[in-house]
Length: 465
Image 1 (cartoon, helix red, strand yellow):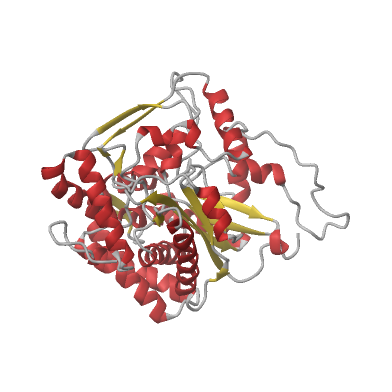
Image 2: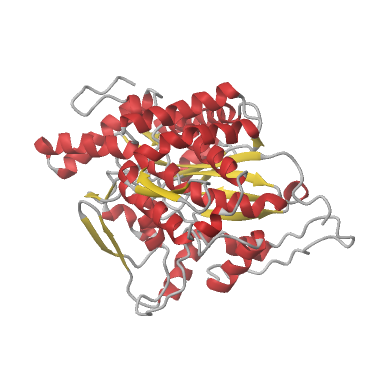
């Protein structure tokens, strides 16, 4: 269709948060707080203690991260005011460290037709017992019949509108950029009292929604994965693959006409869009018929928190690096096997800045492998060029990327801070009480709004909010 996807590059975001009570435990009042906030940009999420903020899309040029951060901060202030009436508050963290197994029960799921149908669909496809197994410093082996464990995850998802002609190279670029961006952004090191991955969300989400038969020796790819290879055929290849590989979880048919009689409006493709919403690729292609129709890439791997400043910096790194890589000769996708990028992504989730990542040198077919703590600072100039090339103001790019530079230099990601604070508290309190004490300190530090690399060490007194 003529004009499809035309227009300036824009970004948008979805921010998931967890509501906690005065003891730092889940506050299962999301419907009450949603009603009190009364803003269409806020909606409920899977767990009854979760909410999601949907920021207004805005142009990537000028100072987009300042504007996006300002909108999210305003919404968070409204939610905080509403939650305070229930002796609660919002928390920005990848996985709530004080969550218990009882908090993941089916009766804690938000009572909406979509979530109930998703749960029913997954159980029907599994046709048998299901377990979640994650190994880190500790080991998690959890029987799971329902969708409940997925509700423990809260993320910061960034959308980038992409011209159809540039979709393939931009999508491949974000697949590569996600590894180092995730390595420096971890904020989910514990789950159900176990010390697991820096970004335990990555393993937990994949397994919590996996409906494949574990007895089959050659199984199809998981519904939640980075991908199956470098993209060659544009967004249509991804849409086709998702339909071919994954059975429908929500078999709902639309009675809406796909387009008007003269074909001037893009088709709704309601069934495809619904199916795509149940195939949780870490970088997902989005078709949207709004505004004349366009394509977006939904970048789903970044965690919620620790602060709005941290999340804006994460987004700037991921978008800037993606745009820079997309502007290079795409011969690198033939020199670097996709399996290396997939390995990067999962090692970054597991080990954070200690992960060893492969990266192209753009000199013939060369690649190098180095620790993320060394690689990330070397990628900052490329990310800056990517942002400036998209029209982002130089001062904006610098202020965002300076946060990443300082975080990488200090080694103090959200995950690293949580691990250190937990270890310090556990020597006196034991694991459960130490998790609560660590999270209390986390909330106090986050309330200052200062990025996580500036937070005091575990032995220091937490700042007053």
